[in-house]
Image (tube, rainbow, N blue to C red; front, top):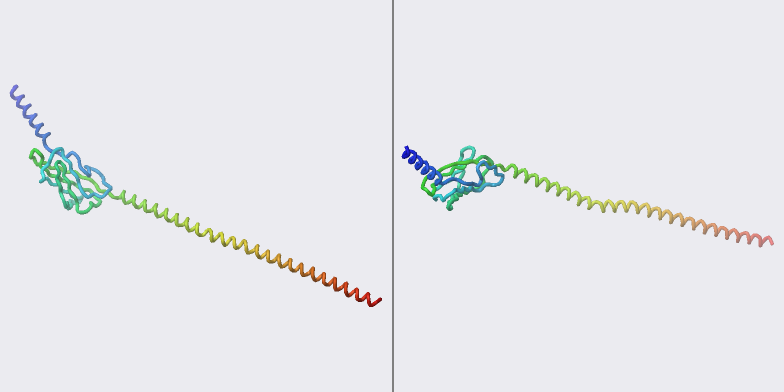
Length: 202
C-alpha cells in the first residue's frame, strides 16, 4: 500500500513538473479580447520561456481569410508577425505554434477586434470644430473689415447735411448783407434826392 502511494506521489509530482515546465503565452499585443481603435501593423506574442526560431504565427479575419504576414521574427521568448498593410476593421484570430525550451510543440489561439469608428468620429468631430472655428473667425474678420466702411458711410452721411446746412446758412447771411447794403444805398439815395429837391425850392 505504501509503495502504491509513493509511486502515485512520484508520478503526480513528475506530471506537475512537466506541465509547469511547458512554455506558454504570457502576454500579447493586441491582447486577447482587446478592441483596438488604432492601426495594427503587427502582433507581438510573449512567452514564459525561450522559443525556437521555427515557431510560427498566423492571423485570420472573421471570414477565415489568412492575413499576409510579411515578416516573422523570433527573439528569445518574443515572436513578432508584421503585416504588409494595417488591418481593416473586423474581428481577427491569432493562431500560434511554437516549440518550447523543453522541445515540446505547443499551440494556441486568441482573438481581438479592430474598430476604427471612434478614431474616425473623433477626427470628423475635430475637423467640424476646426471648420466652425475658421468660419466664425472668417466672419468676424469680415465684420471687422466692413465696420470701417459702414462707419465711413455713416460719417459721410452725417457730414453731408452739416455741410449743406452751413452752405445754406452762408447763403442766407450773404442775402441779409445784400439787403442791408441795398437799404443803406436806397436811404442815401433818398436823402440825396430830398436834399436836391429842398435846395431847388429855396
